[in-house]
Image (tube, rainbow, N blue to C red; front, side, top):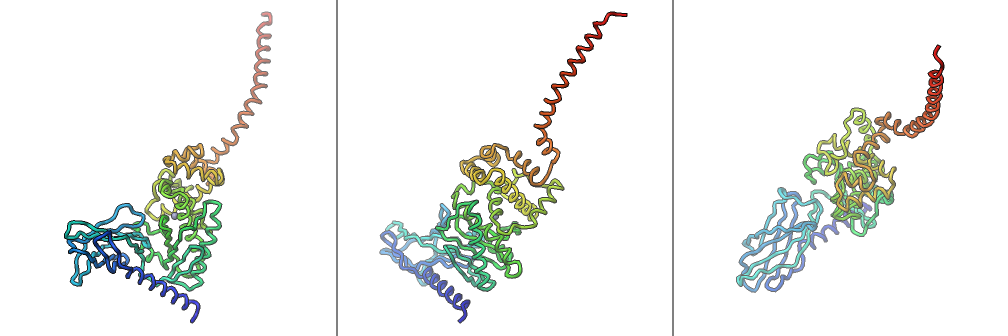
Length: 411
Ligand SMILES: [Zn+2]
């Protein structure tokens, strides 16, 4: 048996074990009156989640409910279950209409109202909303797991290598936290990924991070460009996870241009097309104002690409001008709740517009005359001072001479 086969067998065994565990947990004892037998949540990814349970109680069950929510959600859904002929309670949730993030975890539990009018609640259980449409292989190191279904074992190892190298290179930019696991899922093409994400208009996305879940999804076809794709996409999405782990809920307070700029800076193989996109937009005066990139990025692919290119260049410029302490100060200011524009003013003593202008001048070479004038200004002032003294002197001499001429006796 080859290593790959052993690996696949191991994965299948682990998967089967996981399935068995999720399908046949021990009976769940409710508080007092109910015992829940064979509770299950069967995932048909993108289609349905079927909750079933047998409820044993000291008196007849009048009504049974399943309650569930995503682990990061605060409110649960409450759904009435139907009694099937074999005595099992069942509720089928339509997961095509109300999607959960792929590979997120759901918490679910049961409630039953008995003939005595009392409602009893079972202990909570968890199930992962896995995309089970593909034969996932996996490989792990230091709490990072790479999952893929196209490509050989070397493909998975290379992806793991990109993850490690990416984290190592971003350590000066961001604190690295691997105490909680990270799962990287590699789809073999953009269509599979898009179908999974159901992101609507964002068809340009080659990757996506559920930062709070530690789940990264990327599309990387096996082939000649797989290594550059891995070095670009995996570190970028991992940076999102690290930013979230550093900031927690304050992640959402950061402007999109800042989060995407930092994540794009973490790419080991930055997109060579970014420079060209910036050049063209700068020449045509079609650069996007950063004020428009605070909340989110444009939905159309061309503008979104430019938004990434700008953010990467702009945040690199901030890092080069103000150092890592400047970037950290900026993130802390947004964490304190400053608006997109005021955060820059507070942390860097420039308005967002002024910073944008300086970036355009310094990095893109726009308004060269303005920069030259600003650089020359001290010398112009010096020149004026130097000229003024002799000028005053000359005027003085002229005045004296004129006075002398006026004072001549008339002929
Ligand atoms: Zn991103």
